[in-house]
Image (cartoon, rainbow, N blue to C red):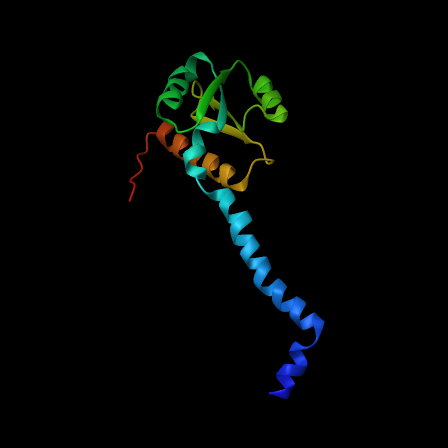
Length: 137
């Protein structure tokens, strides 16, 4: 028992125990609350779609059915400029005339959670373009 008294009488032990209790609590309160309601804010994600005559249907579908905000741009260069300026989080370029090819550019400065959602969305869009259906469980 005397050993415990000696250990707890040291100032560094008291400070260490306080940090061991306070740091995880601060992490839970401050860091983890940043994810609260993240899926309700999906409409704040902006996606620029290069709108050409062959991709007009894709753009219309994204505007109606996607949880994020889709806007059209006239060229890939314009979309990349908006991506660099932080006006959009992703640029979609679809080549549907020659081959069913979907190219996307994602801003790596986005939150990892947002990038994961956008990459998953492009996977589902490319499956839709290729005529494959996806079963949700």
